[in-house]
Image (cartoon, rainbow, N blue to C red; front, side, top):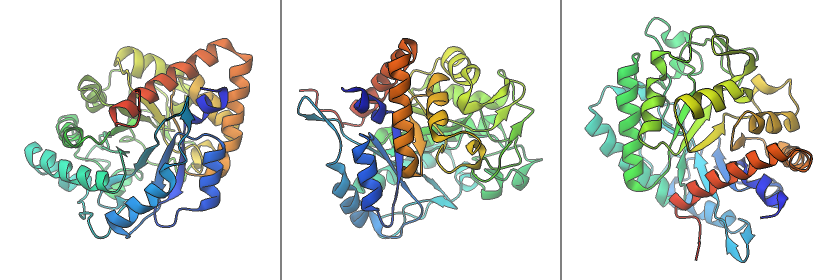
Length: 340
């Protein structure tokens, strides 16, 4: 792979699920972007979504004449966070409702939801939500509790039900993402709309990390990093830019070997004080693999910055190469690599 192609593999760019924008798709193609997220809300249904995805799937890069397929993801959690709707898609209940079911029921239903995504051309779900929202906080927890995205209020319930959700998807062959490490259950503000979101409760040994620990142990393919600050883990950095959170805690202590993906680094207010170039470099320098930006206009600056840093810094270049390998492993698991 060229330097530009390697940098592009590290990016997931947003595209409207309802109306894919050709200019945005061109930006992603021109920057060799290797993964796409369907964003917004669509009621088009599975067949129309598949047609749209097939329309841009061919823009995936080729290396030595072989295509490196696109990961196509979306947010299909349930309740108020379900991007894809319409004919062929079930109306998924909220995380709290899913958490009230038996794990056998959830696993079976999740396998069905995964089939729907697969038929629409989606091979990665940015779910399940592994955040534990204490009952005492409830809806005052704006990013998770106010939308009832959590599976429950105890580590045990969230662990069993994120596991069941992920197992149903795995049995159908759609990848999952445990999010938002090390947890958004104890914050008030939403990092998408607020700067300076702080968790002053969670520690590196917190019981609320149990869903992530269990997910890692059972082979979670992706873990998403939050953009809050965790004062008892690393008070100096947002988690997405923290080597302590990513390299030491997630990779080191929990032993995660899969793809570390960021929460949105394109539009999120939490990262507004950093340029797109700084966001990309800081995330990869901290140990991250895949930079999610729902804003394609940020992609050129991000990929340019990655390439420039690769040219100046051998250790950074090695990090990028390791990230590309992890991403290609995930793509192989999703059946997207023709290795001959």
